[in-house]
Amino acid sequence: MNDPTHDPNAPRYQVLVCDGPSCGVMHESERLEEHLAGVLSQDPDLEGRVTICRYTCFGRCDDGPNVFVHRLAPGEDPYDEPDPDVFDRERGFYPGMTEETLVRVVRGHVRTGEPVEDLVDDY
Image 1 (cartoon, rainbow, N blue to C red):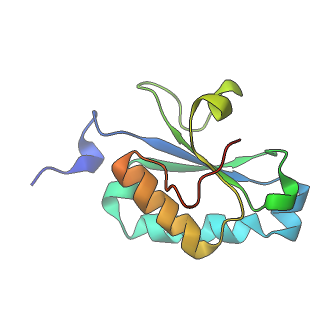
Image 2 (image 1 turned 180 degrees about the vertical axis):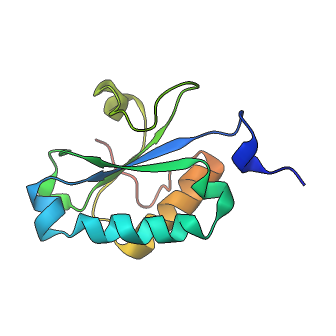
Image 3 (image 1 turned 90 degrees about the vertical axis):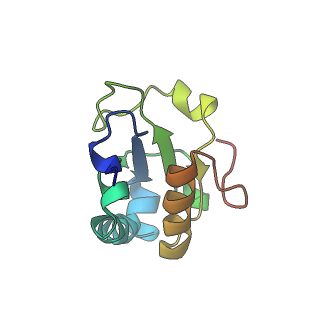
Protein backbone atom coordinates (compact mmCIF):
# COMPACT_ATOMS: atom_id res chain seq x y z
CA MET A 1 0.00 0.00 0.00
CA ASN A 2 1.30 3.45 -0.93
CA ASP A 3 1.67 5.69 2.13
CA PRO A 4 0.83 9.27 1.05
CA THR A 5 2.55 10.71 4.13
CA HIS A 6 5.86 9.66 2.61
CA ASP A 7 5.03 10.58 -0.99
CA PRO A 8 7.07 13.69 -1.84
CA ASN A 9 4.63 14.44 -4.68
CA ALA A 10 1.50 14.44 -2.49
CA PRO A 11 0.09 17.96 -2.19
CA ARG A 12 0.82 19.66 1.10
CA TYR A 13 -1.35 22.33 2.68
CA GLN A 14 -1.09 25.06 5.21
CA VAL A 15 -4.24 25.83 7.22
CA LEU A 16 -4.05 29.39 8.50
CA VAL A 17 -6.28 30.00 11.50
CA CYS A 18 -6.95 33.65 12.32
CA ASP A 19 -5.57 34.60 15.71
CA GLY A 20 -6.43 38.30 15.63
CA PRO A 21 -8.10 40.00 18.59
CA SER A 22 -11.61 39.25 17.36
CA CYS A 23 -11.15 35.70 16.07
CA GLY A 24 -8.64 34.75 18.74
CA VAL A 25 -10.55 36.05 21.74
CA MET A 26 -14.20 36.60 20.85
CA HIS A 27 -14.53 33.74 18.34
CA GLU A 28 -12.23 31.26 20.16
CA SER A 29 -10.09 30.32 17.18
CA GLU A 30 -7.68 28.49 19.50
CA ARG A 31 -10.45 25.95 20.17
CA LEU A 32 -10.71 25.33 16.42
CA GLU A 33 -6.97 24.91 16.14
CA GLU A 34 -6.92 22.35 18.96
CA HIS A 35 -9.85 20.44 17.49
CA LEU A 36 -8.24 20.32 14.06
CA ALA A 37 -4.94 19.10 15.54
CA GLY A 38 -6.86 16.25 17.19
CA VAL A 39 -8.61 15.34 13.94
CA LEU A 40 -5.33 15.37 12.02
CA SER A 41 -3.60 13.20 14.62
CA GLN A 42 -6.12 10.45 13.87
CA ASP A 43 -5.61 10.61 10.08
CA PRO A 44 -2.01 9.82 9.02
CA ASP A 45 -2.63 10.98 5.43
CA LEU A 46 -3.85 14.41 6.47
CA GLU A 47 -1.45 14.75 9.40
CA GLY A 48 1.50 14.23 7.08
CA ARG A 49 0.31 16.84 4.58
CA VAL A 50 -1.30 19.59 6.67
CA THR A 51 0.40 22.21 8.82
CA ILE A 52 -1.73 24.38 11.10
CA CYS A 53 -0.49 27.95 11.53
CA ARG A 54 -1.82 30.97 13.35
CA TYR A 55 -2.35 34.04 11.19
CA THR A 56 -2.41 37.55 12.62
CA CYS A 57 -5.62 38.81 11.00
CA PHE A 58 -7.54 38.42 7.74
CA GLY A 59 -9.40 41.70 8.28
CA ARG A 60 -12.81 40.02 8.26
CA CYS A 61 -13.33 40.08 12.01
CA ASP A 62 -17.13 40.18 11.96
CA ASP A 63 -17.14 36.94 9.94
CA GLY A 64 -14.81 34.97 12.23
CA PRO A 65 -13.40 32.69 13.15
CA ASN A 66 -11.70 32.66 9.78
CA VAL A 67 -9.47 30.08 8.11
CA PHE A 68 -7.51 29.97 4.87
CA VAL A 69 -6.40 26.73 3.17
CA HIS A 70 -3.24 27.30 1.14
CA ARG A 71 -1.71 24.67 -1.12
CA LEU A 72 2.03 24.77 -0.61
CA ALA A 73 4.38 24.93 -3.56
CA PRO A 74 7.22 22.38 -3.66
CA GLY A 75 9.91 23.49 -1.23
CA GLU A 76 7.69 26.13 0.41
CA ASP A 77 8.13 26.25 4.18
CA PRO A 78 4.80 25.34 5.79
CA TYR A 79 5.55 27.59 8.78
CA ASP A 80 6.14 30.78 6.78
CA GLU A 81 3.23 33.13 6.21
CA PRO A 82 2.32 33.17 2.54
CA ASP A 83 2.67 36.26 0.38
CA PRO A 84 -0.49 38.37 0.67
CA ASP A 85 -1.29 37.88 -3.03
CA VAL A 86 -2.03 34.22 -2.23
CA PHE A 87 -5.34 35.32 -0.71
CA ASP A 88 -6.45 36.86 -3.99
CA ARG A 89 -4.97 34.13 -6.18
CA GLU A 90 -6.29 31.02 -4.40
CA ARG A 91 -9.82 30.09 -3.40
CA GLY A 92 -9.34 28.99 0.17
CA PHE A 93 -10.90 31.58 2.48
CA TYR A 94 -13.46 30.14 4.88
CA PRO A 95 -15.25 32.54 7.25
CA GLY A 96 -17.36 31.63 10.26
CA MET A 97 -15.80 28.25 10.92
CA THR A 98 -17.08 25.83 13.54
CA GLU A 99 -15.41 22.59 14.57
CA GLU A 100 -17.71 20.67 12.20
CA THR A 101 -17.30 22.95 9.17
CA LEU A 102 -13.53 23.11 9.62
CA VAL A 103 -13.31 19.32 9.51
CA ARG A 104 -15.42 19.35 6.33
CA VAL A 105 -13.11 21.95 4.79
CA VAL A 106 -9.92 20.06 5.56
CA ARG A 107 -11.25 16.64 4.58
CA GLY A 108 -12.83 18.06 1.43
CA HIS A 109 -10.40 20.73 0.27
CA VAL A 110 -7.22 18.89 1.21
CA ARG A 111 -8.32 15.48 -0.04
CA THR A 112 -9.70 16.70 -3.38
CA GLY A 113 -7.72 19.88 -3.94
CA GLU A 114 -11.01 21.67 -4.57
CA PRO A 115 -12.63 24.24 -2.29
CA VAL A 116 -15.78 23.27 -0.42
CA GLU A 117 -18.16 25.40 -2.46
CA ASP A 118 -20.92 25.88 0.10
CA LEU A 119 -18.38 27.21 2.65
CA VAL A 120 -15.65 29.03 0.67
CA ASP A 121 -15.84 32.78 0.20
CA ASP A 122 -13.96 35.39 -1.80
CA TYR A 123 -11.25 37.08 0.19
